[in-house]
Structures are given as C-alpha cells and as structure tokens.
Amino acid sequence: MCLPILSCAPSEQARLDAALETITAEDLGRHVEVLASDEFGGRLPATEGEAKTTQYLAAQFEALGLQPANDGSWFQEVPLVSITADPSMALSFRYRGRVRQYAYGEGFMAWTKRVVPAVELEDSEMVFVGYGIVAPEYEWDDYAGLDVAGKTVVILVNDPGYATGDAELFKGNAMTYYGRWTYKYEEAARQGAAAALIVHETGPAGYGWNVVSGSWAGPQFDLVAADDNLSRVKVEGWLQVDAARELFNMGGLDYDQLKAAAAGRDFVPATLPVRASISIRNEIERSSSDNVLALLSGTDRADQYVLYMAHWDHLGRDSGLEGDQIYNGAFDNASGTAALLEIAQAYASLDPAPSRSVVFFATTAEEQGLLGSAHYAENPVFPLPETVAAINMDGINTYGRMTDIVVIGYGNSELDDILAAAAQTQNRTLVPDPEPEKGYFYRSDHFPLSKKGVPALYTDVGTDHIEHGTEWVTARKNDYRDNRYHQPSDEYSAAWDLAGGVDDVRLFFRVGYDLTSAAAVTNEFPNWNEGTEFKAARDRMMADGESIE
Image (tube, rainbow, N blue to C red; front, side):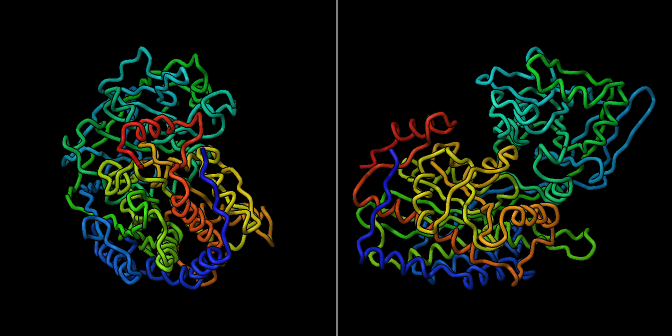
C-alpha cells in the first residue's frame, strides 16, 4: 500500500515552507562551482581530487550539525584495485593470410578485469552469439547448445525488444538488464569464454563512441575480489560497428543480416572463421576510496531510514589529451552532490527532527561501475530491511523551470505516487522516460540497492520548458549528450538556469519529508509494484529481516 501524503496543518505547513526556502539556486551553483573546479581535478577516486572532495563534503555536513554516520566516521572505506592498460595495444583479426589491425581508441577499446600484469589472446576462435542473453523468463538462450569455452564471443548491445520494437518481446523498446554491457560480460564469463567484445552502435548503446573511448581509457577501478577477478573473461571490450562489419566481411559474413537474425527466437550463433589476437599489459595499484555518509537522527522511529544518494566522483584527468585535460563533471555529478548538500541543509533546519532518520550518502566510483553503492549494498551501514527508500540524484536540471519531471523506471514503485502528489504542489506532472531503450535505470547508484530490494526513486530533467517547450529541451539534452557527457567540456557555467533545479530538489525533499513524517501516523513502507523484478527481493527482505515495529 502506498504511503499517503500528509496534509499540513498551518504550523506544519510553515515548518515545511521554511525548510524548502533553504534550497536556493545560489547555494546549488556555489557547491557545483567548487566541486567541478579544476582544483578538484575531476574527482577521480584514490587521487588528491578525492581527498579534496570528501573533506569538503564532510565539512559541509559537520557545519550543518549532522552526525558522522559510520560508527563515528563520515567515511565508509571501499577497497579498490586500479588497472591501467597500456594504450599501445592493438587488436588484430587474421583470416587466410590477411591481417586487419585496429588501434586502441579508434576501432576498439579493450581491458581486463583480471588483476594480473598481462593477458594475451593469440589466434582466438570467434563466435557471434547475438545478444549474448540467457533469460529463462523470456524463453531466450543465445548460448543454448553452444560451447564457447576459450573462445572470443562477439555480442550486440541492448536486447531483442529494442531491435524489433515488438512490445511482447522482452520489454519492447525499454531496455532490460539483459541489454546492459555489464550483464553481457558477466554472462560470457559464466559461459567460459576467453574474451567478450560488444559491438557499439550509438542508438542501442545510448551514447556515442566518444563516451566509450573516454570512459574506458586510463585507470579502471573495481572492487577487490577474493579471486582477483580470475573468474572474469581474459579480455573485455567494445568494437566499433564499422570494425565489426569489416570483421564479418573478412569471414564472408554479413553483419547486418546476422544482426537482424539475432533478434529472432530461431537465431543460430555463427562461427566466425576469423581469429583474434591482442596483448594487454597492465599497471596495477591497490587502493581505497570513501563513501561519505551523514545522519540526521529521527525521533520516535530513528531505526528506520530514508536514504538520499548522489555520486561525488567523476573521471579525473587525462594527460594524453590536447588542451583541457580535466573531466570536471559539473552536471555529472557535481550537480547531484550539490543537491544532496542542499537537501541536508533543509532537513537540518527542521525543529524538531522528523520521525524517521535521514541518511545522506555520497557514493564513490559510480563512473567505474557503481562500485561505491555496490559495496554499500553488500556492507550496509544501516540495515536494508529498515531502509524505507532510496532517492538518487544523478544530474540536476540546469535548463530552467519545467511543467513536468521525468521518472526513470516510471511505474516501478509506489514512490511515484508520492512524487506525483509533491509535483502537484508545483503544478507539474510526471512523465515516463522518453528513452527507455537506453536503460538509464540500470546505470546509476540506486541500482545495487534496488537489486537487493530497496525501493528507489530516480528522475531526470523534465521534457517541457515552461517558456520554450519540448523541442528546445530536447535540443539541449542532445547537445549535452553529444558534446559534454563524459567530456572535459562538462563544466560549471554561471549562465545555467538553476530555477528548475531548485524545483526538482525541493520535490526530492518533499518526498523524503513525507516518508519521514508519515512514520508518525503509519508504519508502512513503500514497495515495488507488482510485476517489477525487484518486488520479490523486497518481500523476502521484509519477511526475513528483523521486525520494523
């Protein structure tokens, strides 16, 4: 059952309004300008930029009178290993005496998650496995009857529903977790493959090749694993679509024909007569990074927690670039981190404190694969059965005021109803993600908690500007995606219109306020809606966890 929005008595309304007024465009911009400054060096984990960032956050939380949340510390250590591949590597394909070689960053990107000095493939057999999916619930198995042990598998990004537009296939145009590159590498490892190369196409991937070449270059972080990740495939990578076409043509095959066939249930994997070779040399550095956690203790239900989260990290610096070398990450995600601080300030202004406790969680290593939140999900500071909900902020509106707000994963949980009621106070509406094929729900820090069962709310900038309309907004979103996403050009600008950001941050505060204040009259927790992949995990969690009474 969905929690109700509390009606506010006059004194309660005045208390709420006063807290909302503490969230301002000036403060949001000030925090973003600091966090995205060159001084912070792109906020790469395990660098001086991290130290400046985490100390800044801890100082801000302390100044607000919040409590260090992790047994007296502001920090939760996240053990990491950094692997930096030598970019002088080359990927070569050989067939009947012909050799085609590709340069790193141009035709391919490759790395290894294995914590070893070097890996090598020499004349590896290759198999095209379509979408590389094993999904019993969709009656789909691209590896059925196939032995890929020790071979290189070539895989399409996204899933068959997107390719066909068939609403009855997987989730139609909306990407499922099976469409994500993370799943595809993991499944290839389960199948015993030696290497896995995903073919990049901008449409189904959701971003251009510049994002691939920028995001997977330089140090690549992972959580420390007991087996040093030796269970992973030797080589993981991306293959540009033009390089994939050349690869298939070398072997007398047609990439586009096989791609079309792969979207059907009768698809038969194709052996490529071409052999692949690559040698990757690594620099390995073990380190640690920090999640930052602050707590506002509740009153009569202090052992129940509403979690606000935003990732503080970005991509650091690339000394190989000409000109600007710093990935400042102003929108992604200095803006979300600034919102976290603003919401913390609003809660700190409340007297008395709300019934339930509120946790402010700034995660590390999101850009490296949601590592900080994944570590927390496995090592929660606050019990997950007592975590009411997570509200994730990854990029805050910089375009101005909107008539709506986009909900990523719209319809997944009862949190939508609470957000909708809050949005009504701003005469705004909720709209579903207009690009569900890009799988944004699986690409931010709430996802590791969602997999455990914690209901999560995740939004994006609205679609309809109150003055300029929808086409204007779409053009600006496309411009950001094409020219600034994961690029050094993602920098703070005093020209940003943060009025819309303030509206959104105030909405997020209201959702949490209703969840924390509702504890005074009800002990119900919001849940996932029927039919979502996370509801069973939440139901098990609540049945098996300690009583929340």
